[in-house]
Image (cartoon, rainbow, N blue to C red; front, side, top):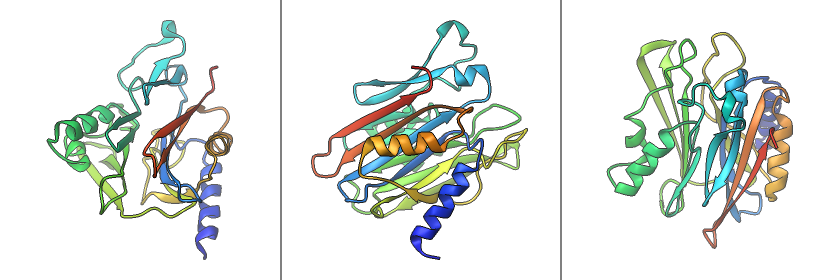
Length: 242
């Protein structure tokens, strides 16, 4: 099977999944000019669906669309995207701040930061924490992905997986998401991040993945392009709630 055949198969896998949960893609545009991050959130409950992405000084925060309907902010309100120097962080929870502080204070690495964290305390799902980092200054590892999850829904044991990519493949990215599929409880993602397609245009990437996600469950999506020559970035946001 060729690389593109694998990618197309993986795109069908995502399109047919009604509830992959939150997802992170990291990769490179086909013209090799930009590194790309994609992040989305989905929701089944009113609390999870009552959210929007807001850009703030190059970072992205999540806010309640209707503050009066916000119930428990602890696991749904956070910064999914932060940047420190040429290090671009994306995660599905407040571990964004953990990684940011470790890198800024030079107290440890991406992995060191996540070694202090575990999966989310939302029994019975024990939602995995997924995280990614693009580091333009790292000569050995261009980007990283991670997932922290429970051992067969055992709340006392955390499994931590780290995936390092020395280079990016033009036109492709690696995707990791929180859930393998819909269910009750929700089954955690299994295996390695899988390869998907990326494009040269930020609007095309945003439209493609927004339309690929389940229409009922999708909530918000962002795409970040990081220019490899100028090191400057631009962010595109799509919210179900306008």
